Length: 346
Image (cartoon, rainbow, N blue to C red):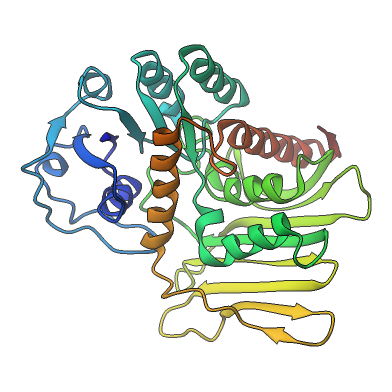
């Protein structure tokens, strides 16, 4: 299938590199308002993981300077949206109405209403809508998802999840609730989606946190479920420590094992990381082999699932729009809980 990528920022670059690793899909068109990026100058692109941008040879790719122009390209089968989140809903709905399948980066949208609008447009047009929640394709999280879904270690009993970064100064409007959404919708959305995937939809959330302008800067959440013995919490936010640009991990409790993983990117050190470790109730300690850790491989696995879903005309157990919509709903309830200092029922 032919793919058109809308938005050549860090995620647009990562998606482009990932498509090179996946059979059955070719990037034939791209779109960005920046003329230098359309001409292949990606040297200014950076993120908090993976490669930095370089000069690219894009001579074989049709270039557009407007998102809505690329939607009129009759040769494109799949529109891959890597725009700032504020533009996701409008461009996705327009692409679906043009008869294109859509793969949209997370967060699905900045509001639950826009997320629902996207889902309804996919249903009405009979096109496939998938949302780029890559976390369950990263080896440690993929292992955790498989452990829960397979029941190999018994039923899941609870977990702690965390995701903390230094100030992402390279992201314009990061703290603007109407453009990016701050740590809740740009960062914690990963764990909100994972919690929804592993445990189902919570019945309530209770969040405490500190604000930065109109968004939560740092926060902790307790998630409750129909089964009161399932205990789940998460913390997320921004800390002023440029020497530790990224930290994430989890401790997942199952009936017959506990899974532990911690990763911190720290300048000139790797001492803060714990590889995925399985602590079994019989006393055995297992450290599964998970590959070379190249994060682009996880995005390639995600895009392989996108290609398979569209080729086979099906949705995805991980990338489905309703799961991504529920993650957005959870994030907004968490913000409300912190602002009102009350438990919010879902």
